[in-house]
Image (cartoon, rainbow, N blue to C red; front, side):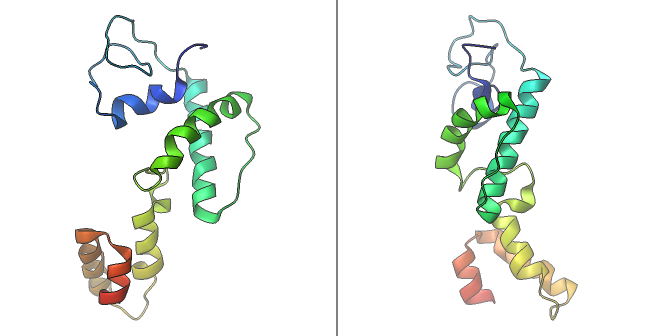
Length: 139
């Protein structure tokens, strides 16, 4: 739908400090004058394609070309939201997030540790989520 922020439909109510009980979805969620405009299935799929494109870029540094026109149109706005927030941004596939990926690469893959030791290491890491500290002190 022209004239409204499609990315904001999915992100603003969840990720902003604005009132999440708004009666509409728009970039400015401070007024409840406008009726709620539900996002379409097409918009949701476009949003997911943008998520996958950013995940690929974050995980292996490869840029994915979006062939879907609606997703390509949404990409600049999605990127403007997500790029500055990549430390707090949670990918759709959580294994590609910074902390989960670290655990897979540095804890789950330790074959010399017992299952219990890996579990303990995961709990310790989750207590602070500081990768540098964990590598230096725990490993």
